[in-house]
Image 1 (cartoon, rainbow, N blue to C red):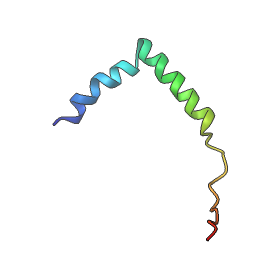
Image 2 (spheres, helix red, strand yellow; image 1 turned 180 degrees about the vertical axis):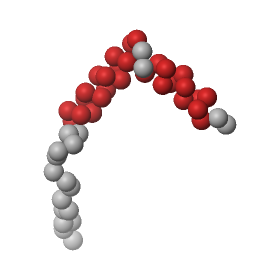
Image 3 (spheres, rainbow, N blue to C red; image 1 turned 90 degrees about the horizontal axis):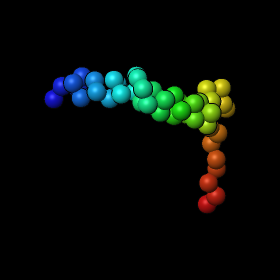
Image 4 (cartoon, helix red, strand yellow; image 1 turned 90 degrees about the vertical axis):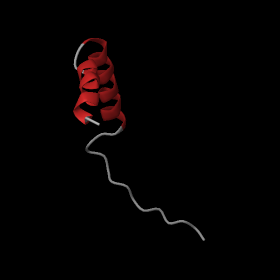
Length: 48
């Protein structure tokens, strides 16, 4: 299996036209909900 041959059409779709618009919207949503400067996870103690 050639991974490059399988990914090439997907990458072409997301680099132009409606695919680029979809990718930009999803990227904006991801950056909104998961900001890079957010606090790290804190451990939560589970009651016994």
